Image (cartoon, rainbow, N blue to C red; front, side, top):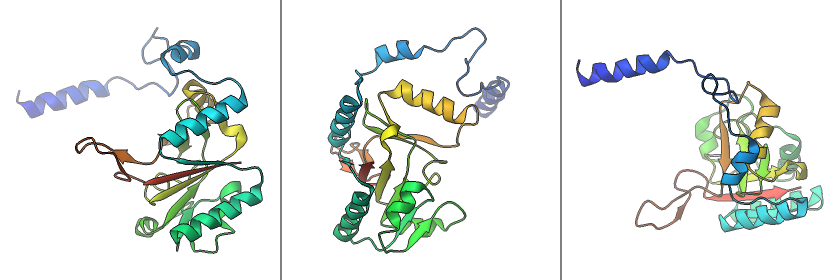
Length: 225
């Protein structure tokens, strides 16, 4: 048996093992760690809403994201207009949603919607992608998105500036709470793409020099309403 045949044999053997549904034990009798056990392995989480908000702000800012807690929805429009003018947005991409519709309506620039068929080349030309999200995780400063909540797989990745619009009720204390949310929201019908966005895209592969935007958006802005 040559190396090719060995590799194919291992693949065939692996395919005989049925994959479990999301959230179920991976083997008979195997139990998943409880959320309490998992929390022992993770960084400390905050308890109250104000503490969680402060922790998320601290973590997101340290990761080079811009975070703004807004008191009024009209303030969202003025903040987006300021970004449009500062960065000279000529075209943006977004998806249908309560917050996204509110935000893009004030910008006065062409909007590429990703809810249905669209030209991926046109998406690459957009100056910013504006999306909603599933949650914000205070423990890590991460934004949780899925293709169903953020306008597909590419919208949060291709434009150079990703703008996230989040609701106050979407702030979660830690990662176990985020996975519990996914389980409750989607059950076994998980989205095809789930991502924890922790700051803008970055790499330090070359001489440990941090470079933003190497594999995705070089800027991440989060508006918290």
